[in-house]
Length: 266
Image (tube, rainbow, N blue to C red; front, side, top):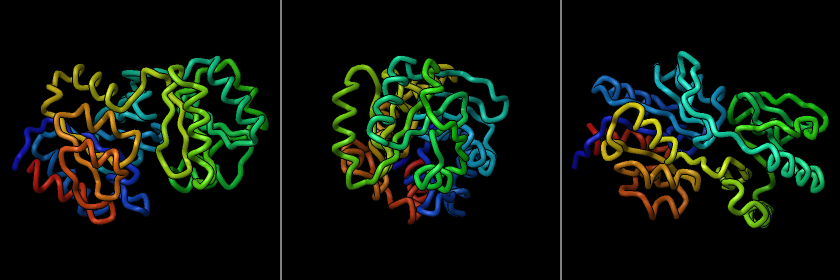
């Protein structure tokens, strides 16, 4: 089976990147084969743009990057912002208050910089995973009134589901609230999703959505998988993503991306 493809979109953590947060040699070779066949490679992640840029540079891409779960589309080379939909200031301020009252660690992403109240084990975990160092401001209420691109709570996985249910209930219809890692709850503008950002980008590039392929593994990849012309889930992906995909490839630690590119696209 060979599927029509002019653009291939890749989630990073748990998909293109292995458990060491690296692009394997096999995956890198496969991406270069796509590029050689004039297929546009687009990175799509919940990560900040500044965290995705080194990966884009490693691959050798000169394309727009979809970051913040679709909250921003910014060109990797020119730095021109093609699309940006931040969190409304009133809801950002409310989340800051909630987190302060409940003593929760909150990442505040503003102008592609990361701010926290205080550096701790959670800010260190995020830095290890993404390479982004946080600026501690003492009290995030100093940033009330600002419109962040994204807010991110980092919390023990065993306590995350009850917290996620609380925030989804509190901000229903006001914000897009999703889990992206076992420890992460992310908040974006309700109009934001990876799927909507892909739709906006391909429209600008004049590429039919039916000629796109998307790879993902986690809950925030659902819109991406469903929007693309063909959706590929990783074997290590969560069940809802595997259920809605057109194809399931091997895990991120078994070069699943390279395998699917070889079998389905090239």
